[in-house]
Amino acid sequence: MNRQAQHPLPSTVAAVAYVCALAYRFRTSEIACRGSLHGRLQRRRKRYVNEVVALVRILLNEVPVSTCGSGDANGDGQVTVNEIVLAVNSLLGGCGVSCGNGSIEGDEQCDDGGICLGTAKAGNSCTAERECWTPNDAWKGVCQGGTTPYRFCNRHSDCPDGRCVACWTVGGDGCSARCTRERRQPFTVRFVSDSTMPPPLLPGSPPGRTFVDARPLTTTGTLDLIVGEERHGVRSIAVPAASVHFDPVSIDTLACSCLRAAEYRTCSGALFFPDGSFAESCTPGFASAPAACPENRPCTSVFGPGNAAAGIVSCNALAAADRNTHVDCSGGTPVYELSGLGGSGTTVLTTALAVGTVGQQCGGAFSLEANPAELRGAPAPSIFTTSTACAFGCTPSEPRCAHGQANSCAAWSEEDVSSLMLCTATGGFVPTS
Picture (spheres, rainbow, N blue to C red):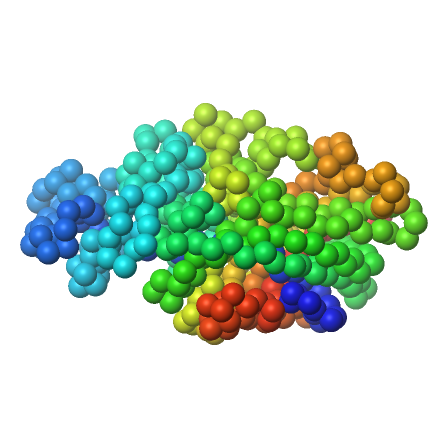
């Protein structure tokens, strides 16, 4: 929805399609230069050439991997052809400038390093991938970009069109995830939720419905967008959890519904397991008790300390811009994927929202913060886009879709986000007798 939207987006999806102006952070930090990351550019090229040669010799089993350990991009103890190609591309591209290594280089305006995600060191500060890896890791990182963002991964091939990254740069602290300066922009939100009923179940369908009958829900609120300056055609966005406030919504005279955002935390900092199911939430203060995380997967903020959401704005074409939700007909959680190509200004953002309902009227002595945790709902991840979001149900019917609207890059530069409209589509499975 846009800043002052006059009407909700067209319909929704298998359970509920939300249209909103909250944010997701589709992390696209700079591709790390393989070979050496330190020193000055002018003195590096000869060393890079030597390291590429060393990687080829490792591939041919002429020398051990330890000869050039930094070339083992995913930490699996091997050097592959893909990793050599990455090193060659880094060499041809100038190499040496790596957002997140803690050193201000090239056209960077700042660089405060990164935070480990996905590994046993999740939550620790880092300046390189290898600093996040340990022998006890369940996974070696989290998918960044591509069609399956925020899933646990062990290698780049686990992340179609994306990368498996352990050392993630984050924004919200004055230095963006793109290593540029940030500015704070107050933003007024009108959040619209709608839903529709499905066609009758066909013979042979599993018992249950994959749509839910619910009344449209509209609320307003405010939040702060922490927007980074454009670098290489991309801006990053972070949303501090403390800045997010949604007004309560009356449900007739019977109840009051409350939408909340939080600093979403999971065991090791990914949103999803490799199969697309939700990673355990260890976020306190909600109806679902925080998960007890295993020692090798510590409880970690997904979007960076203090952030409720994060994302990017692409001033070039953006791959994987459409959001697709596939409902698990066996009664499991919905599976999210991205596809398609978005034009200039496409914004993709991720957050986790909780909806709680209390059996009393809004207003008067009603207080959102006074609600006990069991009435606050449970936060769940969702990906928002200015492109198209569709949900596919169990029954063989057409998907339900919502459509967003991009804000131009020129408008972002002028701090004008009045055209911004983001949407998402989600689904669920409701058993029936």
